[in-house]
Image (cartoon, rainbow, N blue to C red; front, side):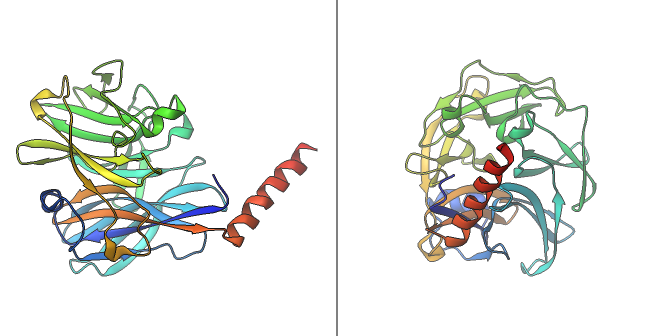
Length: 302
């Protein structure tokens, strides 16, 4: 990470369903409620959510530059989007992000990214939304980045980015399939179904719109998570996907000064969850933290 540029993300709840945003082709003009980190050198990103019993449960990555690691936090909001409660719900020795939460087989699951652990782990809610346990029976071929599951045509499908080579992390999209959520999973092809830095890495929930399957993907052509590109495909072509570029979404002007990035668009019923980015330059607090880390590392090597 460049210590001279500190990326700060915040989460937004858009008061519109994801299909309405896709039809508009822009986030401008929509009412958005924002959630920001309550500490310096921290940010919130990668929001996903579910409605249960009239409450919105929102999950996001909470990142701290001091530890250089993220964990997963959850908020409980009422129907008017008032905050009622929030807690850390998942914390591991490795970095966690992209807490993709979904319902299947009568359970609620979370499939967060944790590729630095060397694997992809599935968690089941044992006390939704506050307690989760890892499912030992789940297995996936690799430590998938930004895994985005979809159930279609009687099967499970997983859009994801491979962890290697490094260049693929912002430019490649893979697709795997399985007869059940727990597997066995296999890639539909050995090669990525799309290689394009301007729209390949997943950035939210796949959804159906106007007889098409739509994939929110990140446009990293200018910077990581700079914008979103919606890719469209026929659901019937999942075995051999043919992807077409759709709308290009940027952070709305009204989100200023958080307009340098947008890399999540996820569906949650009648609302949609997003995140936007502010770049802070030459933060003395960030520089001090990074230099202190480097100094401790050097002393440990002596």
